[in-house]
Length: 396
Image (cartoon, rainbow, N blue to C red):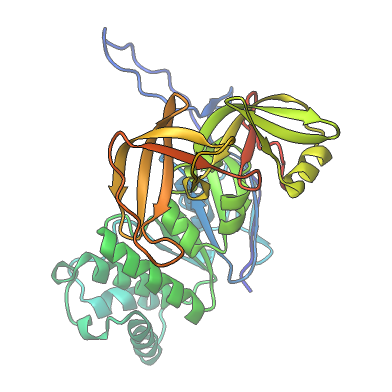
């Protein structure tokens, strides 16, 4: 069993006053909270990870995801809170005694060793007998499809092959927890797609818990059983990929998850006759019964809101009383779909249109300057507080 429990974990770095800047020099800062203790890089991080679960920490650069991973690995001291692996408190346990393995972004292979020697090295440090080493290395090489490269040096391998070796070196130890810090970020797009598939296959074949760090939401959505979205050292939401896509907790999550980004409009939530409707540009949008129930349960009142609609949830319509209009400024052909950038309601609105209609016929192309009528229903809208940015439906 390899459960991991993070309870009120925090990381504080000493705060040093910046040196006096020259006139005109740009001050580069972050939104990390500064207290008397120092800079809070990670704040009150709480997460229970089940045995063999695949958890992905995702967020923009500087959000604290890699710092959290390094605290789990023992490479960073924990400033506060408790970290348990298999029920054992490991705050002060040395990295080598935590029964974890880590795969780094830079591969971190020994250049003078062959693939086989790189993979065998951690077992030799543990003084495992040669027969067992050979068996484990061979098994890992077969799982990762690198058997034919065993006598090569890292310099003679491609980036994807090097990353497979780095993963192989980690899994031969049969760790309880496998930590991966942006392992695919140095690869090109095609190879990243291939390696994502390889990692999915790998987790099905080895008995370990995965904790994976990335800034790439596509990796997070495709790999994770659950994803943890972070910003400025604070957890914004924890959930399955589908949950965070369908029910984002706040504006940040809604904008970070989903490509292209969600469209936002200034609108009004109106509570009327015990129900709710949204008014945008003078037009009323009936809120679905499910969303009405959640708004009522949370005591939502009439108020200005930020209305969010994903590009794939907007439909093109002919002239209608509830249609909105926009002018095509950019049309991006994506193969199976077209991403239309419209000038609508005084802002940019993105609409995803399938290139083939329901009858199997290809749609005509869209021209710059063309007027487009579009609609969206009250079942696909997201309503965020203007004041706090929180989703007014408050999903638990």
